Image 1: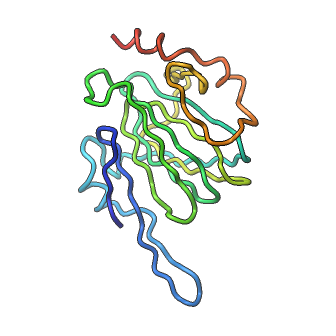
Image 2: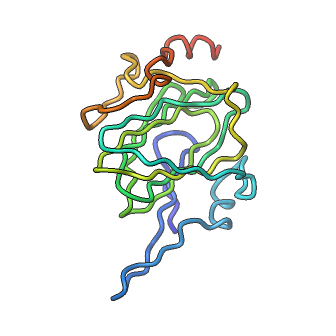
Length: 183
């Protein structure tokens, strides 16, 4: 498994190296030793919850974050493909306010490590996609924060026509309001 750095501070991609033969392929999708050697501040043993979502082409989920001490997560696309988008909302980060997009799919099998303090969202770019999340603390709805998926200040370039967005995501606040609340 390779570890790749990204343009956002502390965001990493863990890229498996599948073994292929006449049967198909086999891949290690997570390795605690590799994770612990690459990540600071969160240990593999800190992950407490795994979740999975299934969505159809064009669906956008996001942009979600967590207040308080934030939430670390590992995200991967187990089936299909998505464009995963992160926005750094850590005021002390050298990449504060910057965003990056990552193609996650069931071919490359990469895990995206999202440290605490980033907004996260994705759009399905295949007929359907299963996205798996591993997070470092139980969900606490009172700490949820969000920015509208179509906020003009973020100007996220979603690659597909948008088909479905939840009412909650449509009602999310603006990047300008969140930014001013962060100090």
